[in-house]
Length: 243
Image (tube, rainbow, N blue to C red; front, side):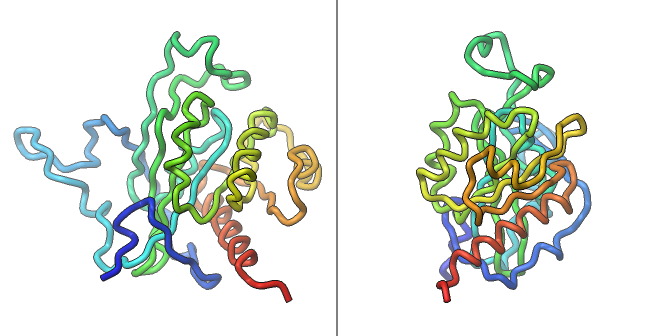
């Protein structure tokens, strides 16, 4: 069996008829790469037995697609992956220390105490045979060298934007355009963030007319699902020959 879904860096295809509407709308937690959480089973002596049964890839899955969640530091990428993933997501968040002072720009998010240093990973079953892998990138520029591997085989990307700090999105969008990766822009609606019409944001971010710009709340699964549906429709539209 040709199982491209066995490797998260492989990519398959997705049709316009694929739907995220069937995903479970229950809550989701998070587990860090070095965590001893119950995301993995343990024997009576603490021996690791393996992943939870609900996190195991369905045996019916034969294909997989990959989407990357990108954005500047502190825009909500880890939150989005955790909200929409059907499995307990893998995160690589580490506590921020004094070593980052003068290196990382945390303007506007001074209260943030942890940061992603490698990636976030989640999964959504589109159908019994097709799964979607979600990869969240680190936001701090010193970790951007990891992007090369994370974008390998990706169909497209979601750019999360914080309107309080639009400037942190410029280089992110520029990198996607250089790579030729199709993307949509999702404005994470923080409670104290100013709201701007989509066309004003498009102009400020210098986006082509065809790139979708949508609002979202990264804390809500349904909202994140709608963003992924927007990206799916956009990717499908790009795949249809003009005329």
